[in-house]
Length: 232
Image 1 (cartoon, rainbow, N blue to C red):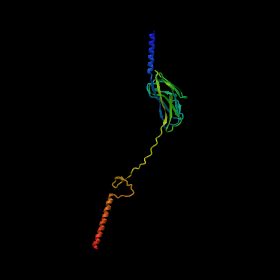
Image 2: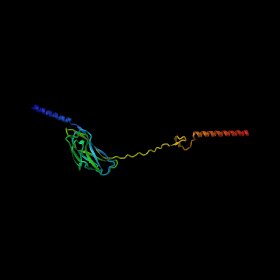
Image 3: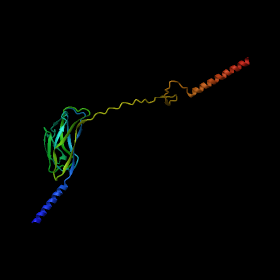
Image 4: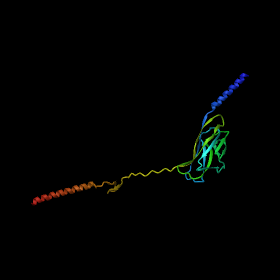
């Protein structure tokens, strides 16, 4: 009998060790969608989703406390479901219980979170237009630590904020002040660089004409001298 009891205790100890060995820490990244709010005015509505990136985390239960920029946003019911908190495929069919006053929500599912995608969707109405360069942030913190649907896995939860944003319009660069050299057309119609010097340099043909004229003057002067001597 003692041998049987010892065997049972041994098997139980091995089983407990096996359960402990199978437990692991899994990443669970929840990201709020960022919506472009350019052109939106007071009274317009937007839906912000919270998605999980990882597949098969098998989270069975978890709780969040949502926070948002209430200067620009008002939390309202989804106009199609008439519910404040709507779960998606990423929640694994979880049942959700939330309070729109405290913005706390708890979810539970026997199947666990399996597919990546939307866990929760929230609808907001804009109180006023969001200015350029501003983001009306929507985020959350964990209010109830996640529990695995099966086993004793623990989770490293990361939450990435999102919200409604209006990007700032980039300032255009001033035009370049570099002045390109202008051109003028030559007599034959071909463009040439404009002469920007203050003096006028004679063209090659003009220089030749001057030289010829000077030569003629010298010849005429010499002829006049010779003629005068002969006459004298």
